Image (cartoon, rainbow, N blue to C red; front, side, top):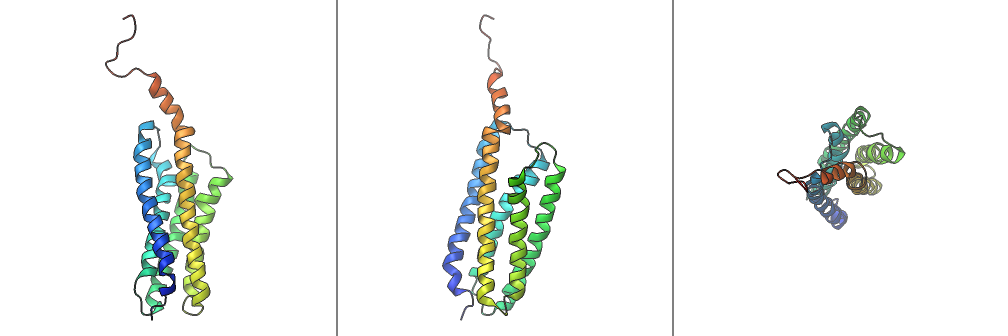
Length: 189
């Protein structure tokens, strides 16, 4: 008997969603590159990269829990290491967000870029510690962590796009639109 068999459909749906959204995030970032936004590597590391990491985390989590494990032990160890790694990464994101200076984070940013991912990875780690003893309940906590990360990624991807299109990137786009293209002649010249 496979211990995670009852969750297979859930993780196929969640993992497929994370994979599709990861690809879509790449497409969107390529399209908004034309906005000529002057994003620094610090901003990208603080805001764009974590979105891809969270989608990737959900995909990896789905893969681990969809694998044909015969016992819970090895999967629990993998998930525990994964949860600890995610906690460390979340702390790194907070550090990066504090170091960047071109955007002042508001409460919503702290919730979606720091608090919720940290909560999800902590819940994942704690759930995997009790997984061998309280399998049923722990699997629901792990599923909740996966959904939190998926929705955080969706929110943050949308937030990034709206910032670039409506906010920060719009100013650069307007400047570029007002400048004549190379080789263009001015009227009356």
